[in-house]
Image (tube, rainbow, N blue to C red; front, top):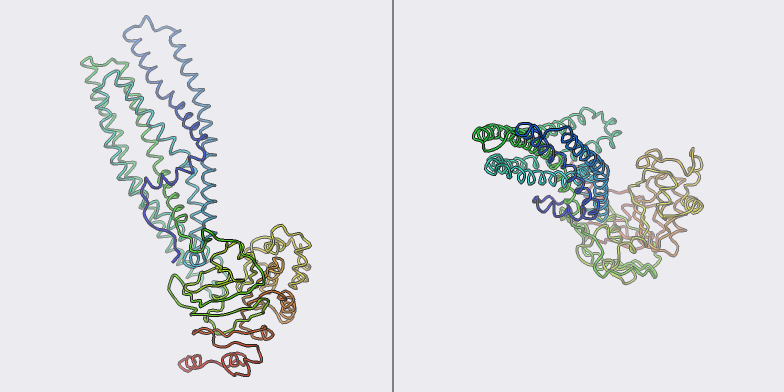
Length: 597
């Protein structure tokens, strides 16, 4: 079963998997960290300047001159200019680096999603996927930029401050810094809860997106059944769950902030008591105590920045985790290691003892199917719903892989050829028409990237779509709306058929290709499809048997496999399943259901 990976990732693994994206821009990263180091110069130097002024004023007042004050002020002014320039680079290029990383990750996620099979999408909500590759990765920009910076700056300030203060009084420095390890231990424990709450919040956002998408796309059904109150109640329940999860997250964040503020106070109290006692007993000077207090203030400000960054950090880690859950989802259908390009010769398709069951529920749809589709043959598949007609046709382009047996095209096992070459040789008109948000031209040209307007118009004429397209306000430049909402069902179907005409493939799979057309359009399309099918292997699926009565061969597919085969006249003479379907006579099973009702 193809589902998104949901295993738990350790912090080390998350950072390790993220590192290659960061290292791709190592040049920007290293210069960003260099600028981060420069921005610490002011914070580190100011306490020493104040210590120098205080000690000089108290113990060597004659040396406290305008020149000394001017030199110290000039030094600090230069450092401030350096700080401003470095901070500008960090704000601009640091964030740009983060955006580049976010873009790379989003592209990788989308590329991987494009490789996943139909089974995956049958079990995954599109709304949650949209959240994973959009909003979840927004936080990665800030994470990629600030994470190295904040920890690097904090490390510099802690190490340098410890070194400078130790020169004045090593014992007092140890006393003041004694609370730092305890703070780190508490922070790690509280961070675990914060990260869990952040992930739950992301998951619920995805669920809300999926529910919102489902309700809005089905708004006509909602209105038709006056189910607005039901949809509002469902959304209110999901929205309330989001409120509860976010409330829990803020409780975790509040505990984290409270612990750091308590440790702030502990460090200040320690400095006041210990520093005061050391001053009383002459162990340090007044200037050094001022420096201690300023350095402690600097350290506390640094710790507070780390605390404030913790929320951003956890959001970034959650975004990385949910990104990896997509990337680590196994690709069920992909090219084998030594896959070759499909060599199309005649379009001869063979089903060799094919059995298929869906991987998620193990529902067996096809069992031991043996079918030889001759080159250029127009083969029709008919049968009752649920007999596996669409599934059988989906196995040819490998939308699913066979559970047992194999499918050959011109003697080549389709699992041994590249997916791209296989699918390029196949044209598909699906039962559920899907048009992309764009113009009529863009939707038809999707069948052949780079197609000219004349080629698109020719394909539209073959599909019988040119007449209604010319009547549209902007012709081929008419915007069709999301999923083609501005067009009728028949118009959408004809555009999708034109798309296949433009592709001009050697193998055609027509799944209810004329199901949404009126009688006049149906006759037009049938003639066009007949012209297109000449010399090409065509597999047609139809419930309306009138559309396939001229097929070269008709296969009646049932629960137990192939029940009947032959042309229209031969099958009618047998008076079997096909004859019953043609005359609209219900099966015994359907009669039984009707009687029970």
